[in-house]
Length: 590
Image 1 (tube, rainbow, N blue to C red):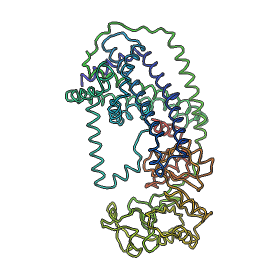
Image 2: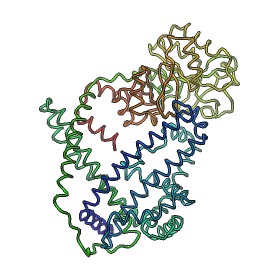
Image 3: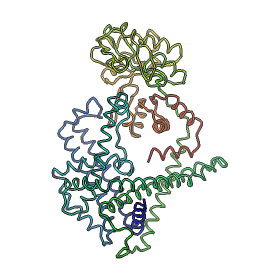
Image 4: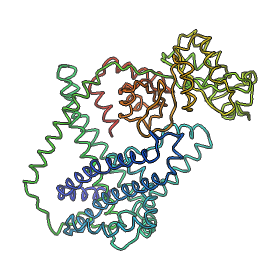
């Protein structure tokens, strides 16, 4: 612990002494990221859409999209661009730390030239090693550097939820996570070795990192843990202190709350950006000190001189950015004071305390106050509609059997189990009758297994007509062509398409889109509102996600926790304090 403290103090000392260098590097990398990489990525994606003739990418067309020769070449180009950006960004920080700790004079041009000499590695077989190495480090990088390109990289929740729903899936997930952790901790020294040593290859860097981690792994983990803990404590402390005036003013002088909130949020945004940049610099200092056993608190052979005039343009730029952010935040927060109309949709009924897609789950969801209750239906071998999600009986009954090969009568005799609860399989007719009694509407998802009768859609429409719910119910499916056909059959029925993946703008002829949360963007929300197409986001089971999309006033959120979602909507209806809105926004951004 004593050595960790010494390394930290030495790192802080170097960063302070070379503070102007770090400000320049962080300003240049962020500028390069937002002015070049982001626009280039958008342009390349539009070119790929134009070359393939698609309007947007979904799970239905992604396979044919990905095998297109132009798309393959553009994806390789983007990967190379991102790898180069990460290499130069971290390479500059590692080399700066190395020279600073050795007390060696350096110039940015010299560092640039040293990094350029190894760019050839990106056009050889070594690029594969670098890609794998970066992939291993992504979990760590996305946590430590949330402002870099790794921020939005995550596994969609519906995939992890599906994996974690089975014992075999949980074991596989844990095994993969453990292997990834082992790989990234053993290869963590590779990038500083590769960037600092002029003649070493990336492959040799990985081998050296593997050997070095045998001796220094626990030392590094201890220092990094201390670094992250201090960083979090500083963030929490600054947040508490800076929001205290807002906490007091919006209770005593509410008329000042909006302006105070905008200024407070702008201040916190700038502070958080600086803190994350500082964390990145500290990380590079710690990595180099640990890798090369740098002498602790050694005196510098020279002290860089920074003229005071360097601070004037920087101070002016920061002031301008602060004013602009404050004005933008005031406008944004003013618009956010509204009563959201987001529908709360109970996913497969209320599954807490019940089995999914059952009458008891339907009743519990209605009792909780859900606006809509989502259920899954399939057609049985005798042409009837049963409420069931999976194609087979294995997960919920423990028995073998395929829904498409069984009659409705056979299925209704079976008992299903989940989370210690038991229930019976029901028909769509049973659900509609109970839903009408409870005065709730259903969102019906039609699961397609490939053995449906030719008149499956007319049968469904006739059933909804018979129960007089055609104008109040919703029907969705992951088959776009069938939903387009259904809309033509029943123009008054609210028809939607379910997408697990979407990249790019949508142009559909249905009433709503149900999209997995990982692919929902502000631009898509705006486009769908302009087209008057509703957006349902699924499946939101985290407080953060529910807050985010209810705040954005999407048309519906599909969740296993309707009570939590209703409570969040109620608080926003009651115009929660600006302080709470700021904390929510900070959580979304960082």
